Image (tube, rainbow, N blue to C red; front, side, top):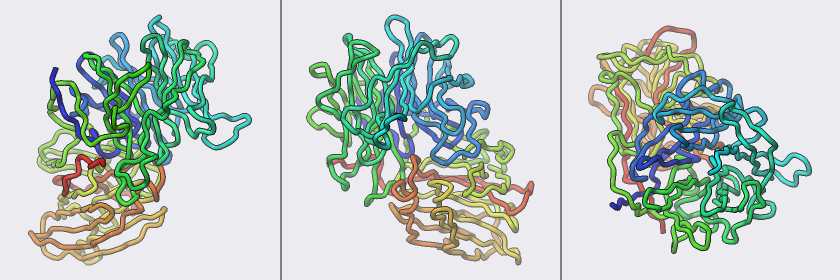
Length: 530
């Protein structure tokens, strides 16, 4: 058996609500995507440390209705499981449809159309295959009658008829959390070990009180016994200045050699502000006295994790410090690219020897629609994003550029446009709570065929620059972007950064982008955990 050292987070950036399954020597991981399209990235690894994205579970418009949804609606907390040659993902679409199941023989896809489960109320479902052939749905729903406080919920179980994709028999509420007055017991996962049914939960909400708890029963219907050491993992007792916060929403995986590990989400704020959203971390698990212990001797997440597997190098790693996309040489965008809600594919075109063409759309980033925007996740606290724009594709009453997007209500964007005298103007806008303000602008002089735009983030500030005829031009510096954090904007997402095109009127004009790059400007793949 080999040994590989993982560095946390194993997937930096906006990769929340991880769920994992093992098939032989292969491991598969899925995450929430909310109102981004395509939905539910599926990651593959052979060592639990290095991951590659092999596809998206929900990659067709017919699978994923998102129109009109809030930024933090859409897809919540998918769970992935494998049984008798079939992969199952069960998830909630908060925008439309509710809880559903999709299946695939190959985890890279194609995945089936969603089968919505009638009568499956609530959120965060999972699926469990028992030894006797029966299948169960486990979900979360709020307590309605005699409700004492916001966040009071039940975990419920019902038998699932997979052949007909329907719930059968009677549902039963089996658990309401590890403590009295616990808030938001949710995200259940069920496992069977040595005659016990073990249920893992997320409790305390997704912010600083987040945690992972356990209960168990000899019977799937209960009664469930509370683990006297709950929570088995949390950072809420470590104080507001601890570098990793909001730890919770875990899922177990067992390796062929019998070792156990947990994936979970956590956040890395800077001075109390979280830009990257909730990220995916890894921890070692051992079993003592019939209960799991996370990172024995530490009891918290660590910067490094020793994994008893042979090191594996993916061809296209999901966590990298530098990405360069030469659009003229590409036939299609990678799986990592994201759109907002349900995109109109006619607005995006990769053209050999020309670049990425974005048609100027009339929907702004502020609308609950699908603006012409395509981007990737912000994965570092310190990074620079660049794009090269062909100037003959810039028009009056149109603008194109780079956006750092937290939600439709909070974002920063740099915009190239053409003035009345045909001069090229670069503008910077900051949107705070649906109010957009012009914070800087500069006329770019010189006869150039292309302009390189850059947006650089240094923790909680940003700067916007341009390069024209090899001359670097500063447009705005020290822009305060704390408003793009979860603490100010709310919601469940992290920031994405990408390219957009906008017009004040309907047009068939397109902006041509030669390339896009993203690179970390400071080593921050791991975080020092005291």
